[in-house]
Amino acid sequence: MQDRAVTTRHTILTTAAEVIIERGYGGASISQITARAGVAAGAVYFHFRSKEGIAHALLGLDLLEGLPPRRGPALRYWSDLALLMAQRLDNDPKVRAAPYLAALADNHDGWPSPWSAWRATVTRPLHAAKREGELQPHVQPEAVAELLISAWAGMAGHRTPGTAQAQMRTFLDCCLPGIGRPSGLGVS
Image (tube, rainbow, N blue to C red):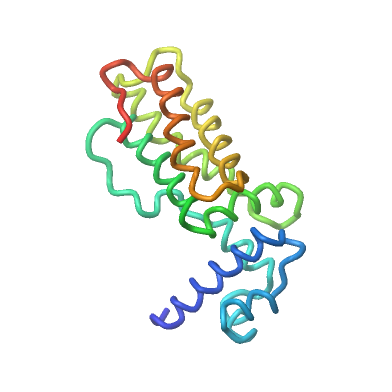
């Protein structure tokens, strides 16, 4: 895609997420999105066939976007991922809208559900931590990943702007001592 088209697509998605957060999916309209984004309806339909197409794009959220490659302990990488997810909740409406839309996807035929992909993303570093001896023997990576995704989605629904990072630090402070061996603990 050309730079202008990429910028327009990003603007549409960000604006759509803002409108969806404010009005709910059912209350958001293409005309509201285009008016706020300052784009023509044709631009929206060029990139997305419908409002549902916008929702599907928002559901394609890549949790790893912006996370540098792993260096060091896997458990540290996992906690860095959790903090990045929270930072993105605080700063990116597309990320804030994704868990809300994912909850709706569970009840819409044809909507892709991102939950399993999101869980897999946060499970991989936990499996690496287990293989590398960083986790306590009783820890089940899938259960901890489910806990993180649930906490993160709950933070997305929390309407106090700018609080997700602090909430995630508290979550990690409580969680890490129960899952990590003392030598592998630490939050950036």
